[in-house]
Image 1: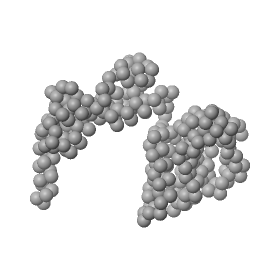
Image 2 (image 1 turned 180 degrees about the vertical axis):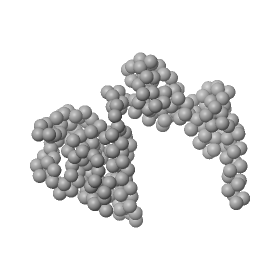
Image 3 (image 1 turned 30 degrees about the vertical axis):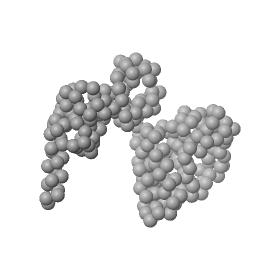
Image 4 (image 1 turned 45 degrees about the vertical axis):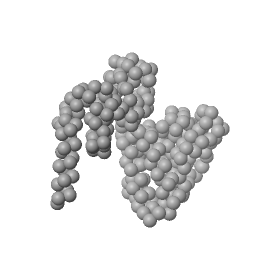
Length: 265
């Protein structure tokens, strides 16, 4: 069972902020930074970049402070007897890089909501959210290969997947990161295992599949293609079939047949 004492998102503090609990709390504390900060680690104060997580167990010395004009973090103080927390492989009192800061921030937002409202499945929801949080922390801790450009690449990939219909080109993407097109393609593939343009195409086809299902009979294939970033409907149809095995119309017929089978059964 887990019990949250307090959880906060985007807690902002001035440059003179510090947090000093020599004997620690009598419970767990998880902090995820959104700005650079200094932490007391191995008997000395060390500076760490933004997007770091640190887990403190009960009665462990806690000391961290701002090292820029503002200090912003997400944090949660809680008790737990769940093995995925009490027997975690994560280090205690040592900051480590976060794989996907935006994802973890959304989990914090949901934890704040669940903690503040007394809903029927509050305890279960909090447990599931904390399980996901600690899974993500483990993924981050055992993730090798963080580069100085990693978080910029992550933002670029999120933008591609959230807005695949934008006019993405390798030169434009490279310019947004301040790197050459060749270097972007190299580090993107190395980081995510897929090229940036393959990511664009896959995201566009995923969106097209949703639109073909949602707007069947109300929008033409050409209109859907345009909304997904294509100015040539033949090019869209060719890429759609290459990835899905169906033409756009064939994809809609397949869905119609599947829906009819469910209704008749």
